[in-house]
Image (cartoon, rainbow, N blue to C red; front, side, top):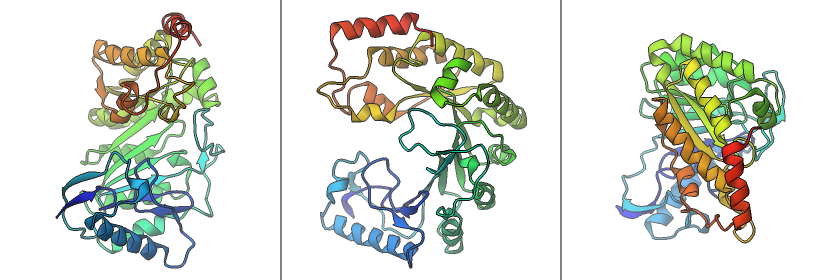
Length: 340
């Protein structure tokens, strides 16, 4: 049947630290249902089915109307299969990145979250036969390895042969992640380093763990050998912090030394929510974003696409580039000569 809908509504679950919902798009989406609610799982599925029926009849919720995932096409009938799960640990982290929008509890020890109950939901999906080898599960921040439940969840999903991705800061080494990368599936690990020097790392992460991350990456590369291409090193371009040639050049020197063969770039997600009347994406951010791609080519390192970041840089999301000539000059000088 042809109607406006999205793939998230027709088969995804977002597991956050306090509850879950059927949409894991970084958009408005539905409200979270608390893990502690009676019949919480069924309530989530009931509202999913209700929304699907509404959309078939042309009723689109306000929160969905501007979502880039909304698409008019011939959709297959919802059969209960879950194609994507996003496990958001917005609770605990062993870094305190200044750009983090959540500001997780800073703690260097693995913790048990009383209000985080993703494991039973995943077990229930497996028991119902709704997860299979076509399902994709992504773990992201806070820091997934800081949760006590993380190894148990990962082991379950490895047994189920789901495709997996872990987004980590790389401070804590986890042997099970190496096992995940060595599995036959196209699993992946993305480590957000965001810089090329210890000084800038400490400024961004507010944790003096640069050497630990480098050593963790070396260990993963050593563990995985011919599967090391599944490790991706990420660089989030931040205004007046790492948006210069010096940091980017050092980043690629480190990547080459470690043996990283895949990188990605992004911008701070808050850049897409700017007040267009008085703020702008700095010219230096745009230049650094473009320079990063050139350096990836120069170092013969594969650059993964980041469509959302590209849309922001290319001025397709909001008009964020109204800046004065003086601001532009300062940004250009910073990009070429800045050292943080």
